[in-house]
Structures are given as structure tokens and as C-alpha cells.
Image (cartoon, rainbow, N blue to C red; front, side):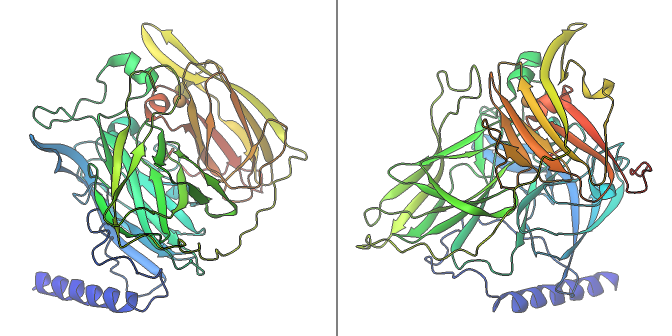
Length: 482
Ligand code: C2O
Ligand code: CU
């Protein structure tokens, strides 16, 4: 009986979601039929009839995934898929996730980039206790900002994300432009070619941790080199998230430029043309590409080695990411890029800011690699104190031979360039290059609590390169829930 009821509900939800979605003023689907079949992400099933509430179930569990021909790879997944299902919503929607942990160890879910209340942030031991094996947790929060976000665990992050636990969240603005789009979740996996088995997360020891592990198979939406069809000369919107634990994605298409139209927090106030896209681990990039060529020609989107320190470019070749098969002959004039809705961002003021200069460091203690801030690993670090209303300026100086993509939980920040100018664009991840530094300004405007600040090379974060910011509430009391 219960099963029948559940099936009926599932069916009703399915019908509701297909009927409510058809006439939505979404992007114009003018690409050839089935153009994105090879890489379209399955969507999470919303079981709540209220259009402004997305209520889903999400299960973390082992599953067999096909990556190499020699055999399936035993991975850890959300809902048995790699990546996990795409959660699609509109700005202001409430998201309820009934999460169940069917992994053999504890985990949490962190909603990367989403401005969640602190107790929904998935930081184990700080914002919530970890969800034990067999346990459940309900995440429930509002999605306040447009853009592409993602979800991943924050327990043994390098091992768990590297085993396949990641998925994307797309939050649509009410004025989305009418452009064909593809959500691309980029990652990689360390898989033995002989039998498809996953390499252990500590393969290669401390040296591999120091470099940051890059999997030998690069994946786009969980697949190796999928192909799409694209109409010659028609703009395509690529909404990209880098979910790899260490790999930087530098992306190129021969003879083509990209127009970067957005980043970590949706559309940007100042679109710009670039020859190559750079997507740091954890970061999002929203870009337009107008694929143009001969009828039937295949363009290849490639991963191009990016210099993030020794070993990142030496003796390494390019990797094919996506094949783009052109349909139709090239138009005399490629389609104009449709007008984009305008966005404006005020530069954050640094007036009255407290300044922090932090060295990113590495040493060997008792024969073990330890990374950290100013010589202290996360487990020995005192949280940085702040209050709602405070402004902090951070400068991270790199003392290590490899770059670090630093990520802050809970708040967007703005970069300060080498001339001291605040760049009016919202970021949650910033690169600290080899032999260089990076500065940003953050204003703690709301949502007190303990927030993480760490390198998104997850091997580095796990080795200690992570601090905490303890933002006290307006009453001056400790903001964090325990
Ligand atoms: Cu994707 Cu702590 O972050
Ligand atoms: Cu790092």
C-alpha cells in the first residue's frame, strides 16, 4: 500500500514538474534535437508542489561508475550518479534536502558559495556534527543569489570529493538571457586503466599531497570526452564549475575566444573576451562561446596545462574535454550575442578594515607534511575573531612552490589588485600564485558563526591549510551554534 502511494506521489510530482517546466521562459532551445544528450545532467526530483520550494532526497552511497573500458570504478556518489543530480532553482527559492548517509563513514554536505545560515554550512564540528554512517540530516535554507553553485562533503574532503561526491546547484535569475546553455561539472578521477579500480586517496604520499592530486582521467559531467551538437555560429552559454580536488582547468577552443559573462555569484557587471578560460578548483565561470567552422567540422574544447608550479606543465599534454560537432554551414555573420541583463556591483569599502597578512606555509613535522597559515595547521590555529558589521582585508603570501586557490565560506569577497584597487566583482575563491600574493576585502554583513577559510586544493586543506573566522552576532555574543 505505502509503495503504491509513494509511486502515485512520484508520478504526480513528475507530471507537475514536466507541465510546470514546459512553458517556463527559459533559454531558447534552438540547438539540434538531442544536442546535449551526451552530457546533460539528470535533475534532482522536487517532491514539493510549491513552486518556490525545492524539496529533494539525496543519498550518499557507493556506486559503480563506468570510466575506463576495463571495468567499472567503485566510487562514492550522490544518488548513484557522477556527478550528483543537478539541483535547479530560482533566486529566493527554499531548498530542503533530506540527506541520508549510506557511506561506510561520516560525512556532511557543504553548499559551496551559497550564503547559508551557519548551521547549514556542513563544516563538521563547527556548524554541525558530522552525519554518521547510516545517519540523516535535513538541510533547509533559502537560495539568495543567482549563479552556479555546488555541493560536496567537508569530512576528509580530498578523499570523499575525490571518490565522486560532488554535484551542481543552478540558481536562475528572473531575467535569464535566451541562450542555449550547458552546465559543465569538471573534475577528474584517479583510476587504474588495467581494471578500473580507484587509487587510494593517499597514493603517492606526501609528495602527491604537496603537489595536489590530479586524476589521470579528466571528466566532464562524469564522462570522458562527451560530444555535443551545436549549430554553426550560434552562441552557447557554458556554466562551468571546477569540482576537481586539485586540478586547475585552463580551457581553450582553437581559433575561438570566449566571453566571460559571470563567475562565482552569477552574471558579472563587466563581461570580457578571453582566449582561454581559467577555472580554479571550487570556482565557477560563466562564458559564451560562438562555435563556428565548416559544416560537419568537430571543434574540440581542450584542457591546456596551466602553470601552478613545478610539475603542472612539464611533460604534460593537452586533454580533450568536449567535442563540439558543428551542424549547418557557417553563417555569413555569426549570431550577435543577445543582450545580457545588466548587473552592477559597488566596490566594497576598506575603510576601517582590520588587516591580516598571512603566509601560506609548509613544513615537515615528525616526518609528516603539515601545511598551514603562518606555520600553524588548522588543528592548532586560533580562529580569527570578527563581529557582524566588521570588514577584514586579507593578504595571503605564498611561501610554497605551488599556487593555492583560497576559498571563504559564508561570504562573497572582492579582490584587491596590485595597485590597491578593489575590483567590484563577487568571488568566493581567489588564486594565490606561485611566488606571489593575493588580497581581498570581506564585509561580514549578516549570519554570525564559524566560517572556514581554506585552500581548495583539498589535499592542502586536509594537510592543515585552513583557518576559521568566528563572526560574533550583533549582540557581541558568540555566534556559532554548537
Ligand atoms: Cu568547496 Cu570548504 O569548500
Ligand atoms: Cu593549497
